[in-house]
Image (cartoon, rainbow, N blue to C red; front, side, top):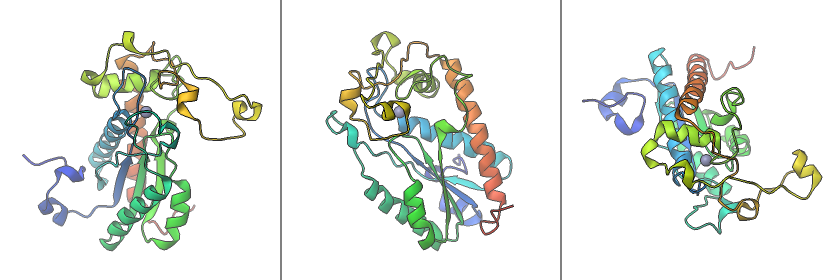
Length: 254
Ligand SMILES: [Zn+2]
């Protein structure tokens, strides 16, 4: 049986040869500890799930989108002393992104969405640098920013909290330890007022911030909450893909 036509890992050259794709989606995750109860691949499972669901919706609406295999390593410079957290520096990510974008450019694909699944990744500056040198229109989405999580969760949390735990309960329930095994995800704040208020910024040194690697309490997580939120996110991103597929990359302004 043939694979899903919007997942590059599953399609054959026969399908690719016969299809004109308008938009490529590059999911980009991370490999890192997620409290005691979620797997190291959490960000990768989440971003792959959302990319696939959004692409499925877009494809069924007639948009020719193709999801590329996900990049599994994120920027984790603040977690280097947590065993088996794997860091990929921003400069390496920029080189990977440029190679992917230039591959697509030579093949006539006009639009690329970097779908980000990890808070330490930030593709905006890379795109600013790459865009003038590349004929592919490149944009980026942080999936957790597309839909306001507050109506869906008591306390969404930042990392391995209620939002992520609920999402994983829906995506890969067999990979979770019971909530009784999870830490509370208590995070220590910066001493500096400007940083606490969010208008001054520095990367957090993770082991100093949290004892269980989590930031945000997962106690109120539930599979249904995850399903509802992920559906809303996929619907929103799917809608964006449909819009992007239809637009001329040279005519983006009203
Ligand atoms: Zn995560």
